[in-house]
Length: 133
Image 1 (cartoon, rainbow, N blue to C red):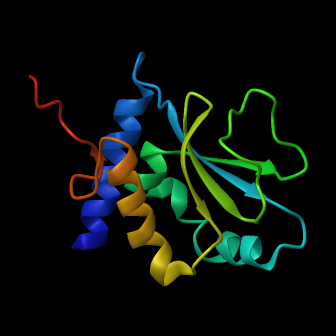
Image 2 (cartoon, rainbow, N blue to C red):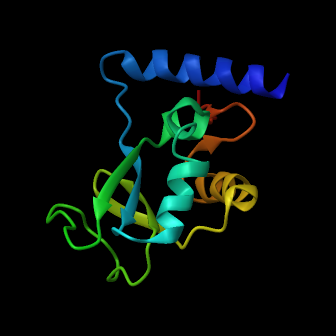
């Protein structure tokens, strides 16, 4: 049932984000490097499912080579490890996870990461409702 709810949440978020004016500003930027074994592990274990999850819909994945950080991407400090996952809002770093802890730990760590730094509601699989309405 949990997987069905996750799928429905993803579909609803995808539909909402496809509507004009509701484009996602928050992204997960993965800074990677050729030959990085932990990047390869992430690519095998997480990347295929990521865009189909509520987390992936809320914060789409953008990949960047460590040697080719875009000028417009405002990072707090230099990247020293790959992969480094940057949570960015309109190209400004809000937070980062350095390294890949494996699939067992990635999802709970990332869910907590989103809750701490955005209005993502893990249980609803979307942005938390505005309590001022």
